[in-house]
Length: 476
Image 1 (cartoon, rainbow, N blue to C red):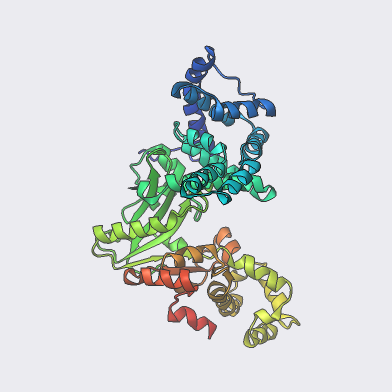
Image 2: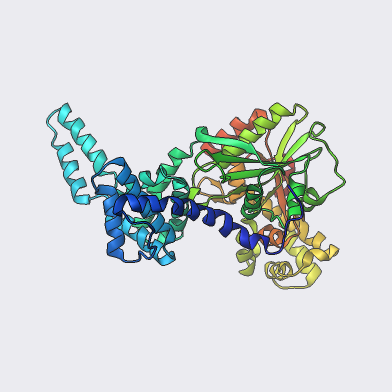
């Protein structure tokens, strides 16, 4: 692929052109046929913004009689109508599905009564089947119809992504989102996904999506992307056979000879000429989910384990598998505590050193003031802050919990996969994003192949976090 791409305005153009643009084009390509089959007229008027009309279209797709051809044509028409609706129109569509095509609770009550009054096993089983059917919302029929059409899974994924933003304001919308998630969970089972390597020779369209979807360390240009796909830099993604041009989740890997401690060095070091056949360590430094509508459907843990297995099979020289990971929840957790002036978050020695150095009454407030500036540019200040922030970061990772798991989402992800918290890396990401997340701190999670299952069980059953001695030493 040529390298002289125009990089001006690259990321602002890609997504609409390649994702939404491709999507609507596919449906517009078949909508004429569908309309002709139904009405003998060609073309479609996209201005369906009347609630009653939308409700009638949905009703006809779910309940209307007819053969497969007319049923498919109605579904295609409705899908195209949905794609052409403005945001408010789509919200109306979601509201109709959520409220008008949910279960009938009176029917449900009647079926429960029939089960309770069953006189024998035959009647009980019949009542159980009727009850199960009563618990299935009519909208499920439509959602399944959508899934069978070209790019229908993508439509449902994007529909759920839109629903997630409103699910808290309306429990019916939450339930609709849950219904879609249940269907997607079955369709995106690990056994139905294909692992593919993305290389510099992959299609331009796929590489553009890689740039757009990268969520951890921004890809700034085609040159930047080329570095990430060069010789000892690899990228793997899961694809679904009904969405062959859409990576669902991808991970970027560097094959090196040591545990990486700085993301800028890992991304930009041009004199590192380690060939894949000579590398001893695989560093997973970025994993990005590309489909917000698949939130809550576990893909990442399978991706990591599948890639580890693939690399260990292909390169017997690889002995170590680890990550260089951000700590996205650290600053969000720490800043409010310091802003409140809570010196209990600091140890006596830390409080004393800050007060002595800056002559202040409240060490927590002073630390908050320091951290609001570019403190890392002054070596003396950075050295004073280093043991305090590093210790607080380890405390956050090991002790702060959300239910029974780590509060930090990245930590929870890798620990639930069976990794060990191996090392804390000081000023490992000096980008604006890195400082905003965790004051530049990054950590290594280590995947010891022989311990993955044991660590996973310890974490998910007991909430026990496996950490190295060097990490634990921060809390002594």
